Image 1 (cartoon, rainbow, N blue to C red):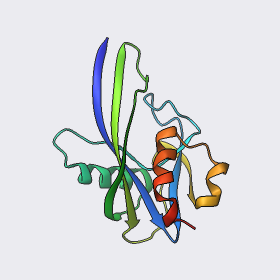
Image 2: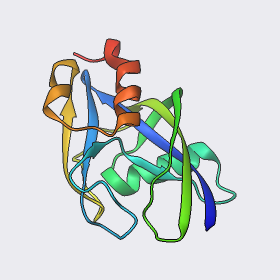
Image 3: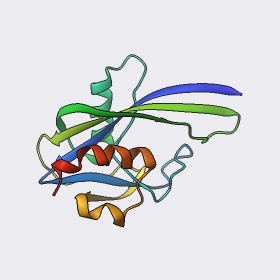
Image 4: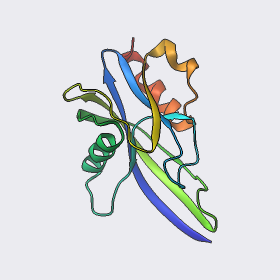
Length: 142
């Protein structure tokens, strides 16, 4: 069994007291959470600075430029997207702002987005690690 370790960055982008979440679609074979909601972000490329990777991933998935990122939470999970491979993903979650608010432009990996506040969380099925990160910033949300 081949083992792979990845580092990821996830952005909790806050604007007007709401945080951006994306609904995963069937963009490619590695995505195993079709229909679940999560924060934008993804794996950092080898040699890439973690903040550069986070900004790149957030832009690729949402079309937004983030500013003032601050680490707030670290977690890990072990998805099983490929037979005969064991994966571990270690993610740093950052609370950030929107640099210039524009319309969200989804990548092929996602099918919907929502800006949610504290009282909206029960309407969406977030991945467990994303829900834990959401709990870290509730005080910033309306």
